[in-house]
Image: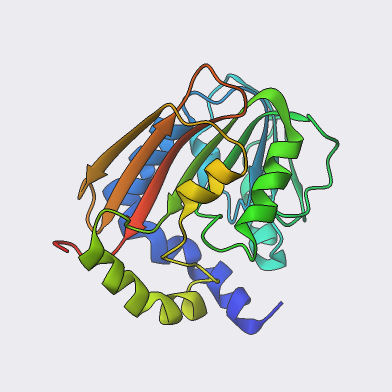
Length: 222
């Protein structure tokens, strides 16, 4: 792992504190309130989602490929003794679990930074049970805001380099649909927490459901 990944892990929580307080914290709480059963979280980072998992979770497996993030994640888990939680040093596109292993998969701010969203989504679908659900928060292309897209494209090279391979212009909704997931509702919420836009997608009746929030980052007022 590079020196950049070491410092990113060390300062990640501090760098996200402002936006967590502004909006991410409430979004995580809302998003994860309905998860249940045997849960897999991919790209868990330092474990910021741990606070928001409800009692309806039977078991929780957290995967994190970055060794520096994983160390902080393990320390965070030690503070939650008695919970059925474990970590694995797996990448999101190489989940070494049997098919149909989990009721729920959680992915927050991950699909924007993996090398191949397509491979990652196929792995997620493989390990989900037939009626499993995917919950996610994500950076996405601001498809309905052409002016915002210009700023996303402008900042993307710098953003990728400085923010752990995070891409601002991925068409995550299309990638998820192409992977075979089903959408029932798409609700746009603009400027709920500047500079973010949210797309909310849910389908409570179909197989391999997605209950999600997707975020499009750009300049406020764009």
